Amino acid sequence: MIGSGVLAALVLLAVPAYQPLKFHYAIWRIESASTVPQERAACIFASRIGHVWEVNEIHPDEFRTLPSRVKPEANDVVTEIEWWDGPWWRWLGAGDSQPYRAYRVLLDPKNRELLVAEMK
Image 1: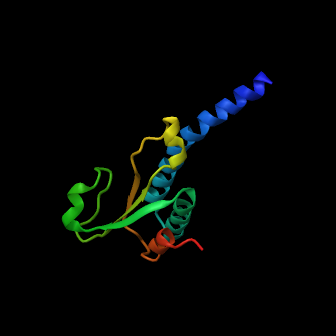
Image 2: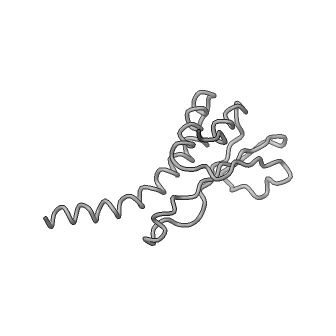
């Protein structure tokens, strides 16, 4: 009986800890994709791990706002994908109330549609 209670407590603690990992993995997949099929798979994965809050286009005059890991060329348009972690673990004190953001110059602009598609 005590063992199952301890297991349940560990699961409750592990689920919020898992959230940042899945978003960091999605960010890595999006930002490191080197082919159109990899980019497409990363965008599909990104749309499935959580609710994509916003998809923005960042134009050259706004590049100063980008993190240093993003190195666009002068005429690129950078796509910013933003998620918020799930609301139910915030009341547990877990989650960092900061959005998770990935940045990418899309190889195939059609992949943007995968991120902003409406749920049916």
